[in-house]
Image 1 (cartoon, each protein chain N blue to C red):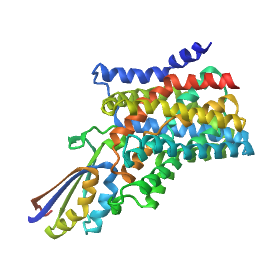
Image 2 (cartoon, rainbow over the protein chains, first blue to last red; image 1 turned 90 degrees about the vertical axis):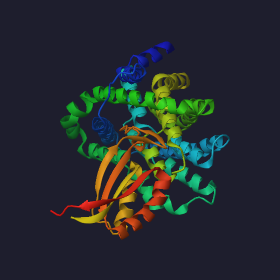
Image 3 (cartoon, one colour; image 1 turned 90 degrees about the horizontal axis):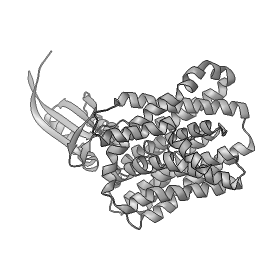
Image 4 (cartoon, rainbow over the protein chains, first blue to last red; image 1 turned 135 degrees about the vertical axis):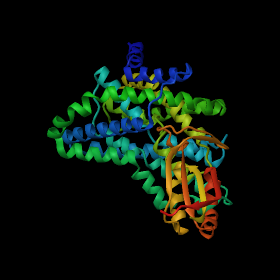
Length: 324
Length: 97
C-alpha cells in the first residue's frame, strides 16, 4: 500500500511533465516556453489556488482552529531560518548562510499546489484556509534572513547600498505572488458559491493542465540550473534534502499538537519542507547582494523542489497515515 | 545636430528600479530600457529565465550632457559594483527632429 502512494504520486501527470522538462535539457532538445507565457501560467496558478482557498474559507468560516493553524504556520516559517542559518554557518559565509536560511524558511507555492493535486488524486480532503497559511509563510523568513545578515555580517560592509527596511517589508509582504494569492482569496471568500460557479470552468477544470505546462517549464529551468550546484559540493546537496525532511518532522509534531486532520497535517508538512525560488531570491538579490544566487536558487529549485514533488509528498503522507 | 554623451548600462534586472531612481536624481529626465536581456559576463551566463528572474539583465540607454553623465556615472558605480554589469560612456550626435 505504501508503494502505492509513491506510484500514485509519480504517475501524476504534473510530476511526469516536470521530468519531461528535465529530460528535454538532458537530450539537448530546443524545447522552450516563452518567458511571458511562464509568467502568465504562474499568475494563473496563484490566482486559482487563492480563489479556491477563499471559497473554502467562505464555507468553513473563521474559527479558533483556523487562527491557531495560521499562527502555527507563521511561527514555523519564522524559526526555520534560525537553525538553518546556524547549520549553514559551519560551511558558508554570513551572506550565503542568511540567504539560504531565508530561502528554506519561506515556501514554494507550486509544491503546495502539486500536493493539493496529489491529495485530490488520492481522495483526501484538506482545508482551504491552508492557502492563507501558505501566503503568510512566504514573508517572515525574508525578514529574518536579512536580520541575521545585518546582525552578523562584517561591519565593514557597504551599508548605503543595501535595501532600507521599508523597501524590504514591501518586497516581503506585498510582492506579486503574496499579493495575488491573498487578493484572490479575499475575492473568493467574498463571492462564495456564486463566484465559484462563475469561475469554475476557469479555475478548477483547467487547473491540472496549466500546472502540467508550468511544471514542464520548471523542469527545463531546474535542469539548466543543476550544473551550478554541482560545483557547490555534497554539503549543499545533502542540506537541500535533509533540512526539508527535518522541517517536515517539526511540522508534523506541531500538526499533531494542534490536532490537524490528515490532509491538513500533510499540507503543513509540505509547506514547511518546501523552499522558495521566486519571492525570496528576488528579495535576497537586493537585500543581501553579496550572497551568491547560484547557490540559493538551484538548491531550492533543482534539488528540494524535485525531491518534494517526487518522494517528499508521498513520504510525508505515509508518516501522517502511520501517526494519525 | 549637437553633441551629447551616450550612456549605455547593462545591469542585473533586480537593480533596475534603483538605477533609474539614481539617474533621475542626477537630473536625467529621459531614458530607454530594454528589459529582460540576455548575455554573458563576469557573473556567468545571464539566461533570462522567467522563473528565476534574478538571472536576467536590463539594458538602459541615455543621452545627456557631459556634466550630467559624469554625475550619473559616479552615482551608479556602487550599484554596478554590487550587481555586476557594465557602463559605457561615448560621444554621440543628437539629431534634432
